[in-house]
Length: 352
Ligand SMILES: Cc1cc2nc3c(=O)[nH]c(=O)nc-3n(C[C@H](O)[C@H](O)[C@H](O)COP(=O)(O)O)c2cc1C
Image (tube, rainbow, N blue to C red; front, side):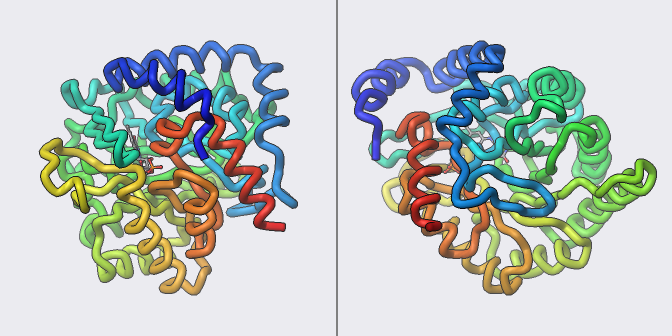
């Protein structure tokens, strides 16, 4: 399922450039499209047609099952354009409290044969205040086309012991604008970040964020903001079980499974680049993690399934394993933006 025009012309052209230059040009173009709000709205109605009925999850209405995964629109520069492509929700970020440059370039690598990417971007972003300004302008609550999730993380320079403060700072700066938050403790490119998935850190971190959320809701007389946690595919099942128990205990709203992997399966055995692997080679592992979470929780914790979605079959598999929604990133790089509409249409036909 590849749009032949994208494969023969657009992708060929884009793949001649350095991957990060391509990314920057794309974001630049989409940020221009985002300014043409009526056009984006019209395109959204055409491309993002609802399934039999919108999906209601943690108090939000999702017009379809397909979302944009975190990392593509790190600064929330193109939200209306992604809605125009047909996405039923978009996750901006990962954002940190202050602007930071990320790792040194090159830090993004394509593997076209395997339809995969390795990245070690390291949370390059313009900071929470700038993101708040952008979302306020391009997707204010009153004119919001689709739910906007905000994925939050800690700065590279912040020691692990002080990580809680970074997440709280992001939460406070963006809580008025987020339809849901994702606590990212699973990116492999910020040294030590994945340690936050260990029980000793996890309870304090997630407890503090949820306390802040509940205090805010009480103060303002509103509902708490739904909060999800994004996990790595490299955790073992005991670690996942521990994490799930804490999420349920603290009243978290769901889990996003999964982030990129540090494993190097199959043909990647001898690939030397450090960073997180995404796309096709991640698919099987991500599906297994989703199945495990669904079985362990008896289906009572909503799952957003992400990792290696390339076509309707791979998206449908994630739903079969227990995901309620799906997200993608790498699939769109290889198969083009038409993949979004194809997924929305294909999944809605399967739903009946
Ligand atoms: C270049 C790149 C940057 C990413 N940046 C982030 C990020 O900032 N935060 C995050 O939670 N996930 C990030 N991800 C992970 C994706 O959101 C997703 O979980 C992962 O790529 C698996 O999905 P996919 O196979 O559809 O790409 C990034 C992925 C890529 C390829």
